[in-house]
Image (cartoon, rainbow over all chains, first blue to last red; front, side):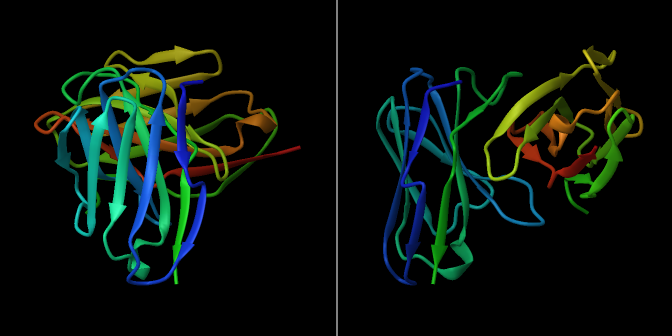
Length: 115
Length: 110
């Protein structure tokens, strides 16, 4: 299995509080992604990174920001959590970019509940 | 219309049965196609890529029909361990991004 960890694995927080989720990889892959998964929807891309300090928006980026200061870490921040951000968040990595056919490896997920 | 559509199921089949899932996609410029498998409360993992000529991996066969814009997954001789959700994934040519279907749930019964 690819070396990807996510922390925390579970979190309950209150509306309006800031939350940061961490993705850590030991594979030295260049590309990292944050998705959310909700019932009735497929995985939806929030943000992705194509290198240190290089990030771009996905299809559901509103309310989220990301940072990547090191190859191995990709942080997802909810500046002011809302109940609509209750979801399961998956980090993924790949060694090739979006322009090629490739496999993405997923982390174990973080279950976030916003009350 | 969703960009990638799957019947969510669940498909309940006995062990040893053959089961097929279809998935349709809306963007004719889609370039690459995949099936991922996701066990309950786990992360998705790549099951197989789908090639234009069709491809087989053991009991699993994937087919692509570009004219009708659908891909299929056939599982022969179902095992209890095949119980999972199968995600259809399409890579859009222009953006390169992966678009995931919501998944089809398979339950294989003894």
